[in-house]
Length: 82
Image (cartoon, rainbow, N blue to C red):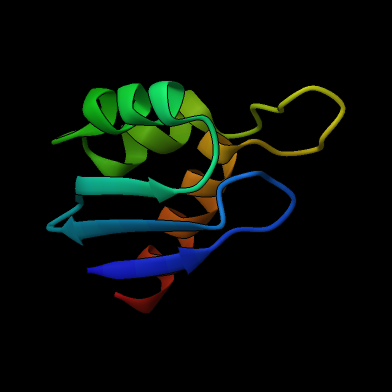
């Protein structure tokens, strides 16, 4: 399990697993529970590259990022380590 500390969003952390390029077990700590539970379910079992393509650059209100964009940052950081 990987924990990513977010920046600029309501969720404080994102826990997830990335194995063989597949995203699983995504859990946002903090933020909008309903929306973030839905995102976690929707990306479950998706290839990391697909998650990146779909969610990269999404913003929230006046913020320059969003919880979903932060998930992309988390995945990219983890991919760099592998």
